[in-house]
Amino acid sequence: MKLLLYCVKAKPYITRGNDGSVYPSCVISDGIKEWHLNGKIVAECDFEVEEIACSKIDYNLSYAIDGTGQAFYDNSKEYEPFYLGLNISNIELLRKSCLTNKEIYDYLKGKNGYAIHIKNLKIFDEPRKLYDCLIHPKIESKYYGCEHLSKAPQNMMYVELDDIRHILISIRPEWLCKILNNEKTIEVRKKVLREMIKWVKN
Image (cartoon, rainbow, N blue to C red; front, side):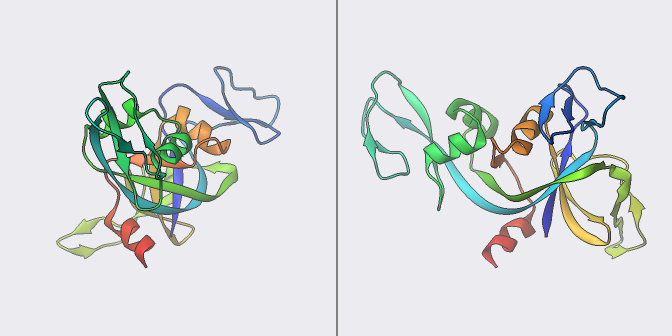
């Protein structure tokens, strides 16, 4: 199972140029081949999911371990968010997610979350539309037919694209721009679909 990356419609607008680069853009050119990516499914990828435990460390009272085995002490900060993952250090999480400690902590509100590792990214030659995806509406615990997708999920959902089951995930354009340019390879989320965790463990 793969992730489908959907660029939400909100600004900033992002564009893919002839050279394959992705960049913020306020003007969409019709004269050359450029793709306006907002509101479209732009890529697919493999993934791994890791749960991250979020807490606060009081640097003024004790040493802490940053996930790399290195002890450090900084009395210039009273409190700092602290994350523990099975296979990821705090430094790696911050670097690969393009987020600061404060941004992650404020988003997770001090609770545990998930790091989605994006792997084998494939950008579509031509962006796909939501309508290309099919969903199975659930009625009385049974599935009846299929419907074309008309509205993107706030977080993520199961869909079928070209008769293959995928997970469609909505991503803000500024973050998706970094993902498509290989600057960001971890997406932090409060919740993921249960099967995503099972998929990794299996």
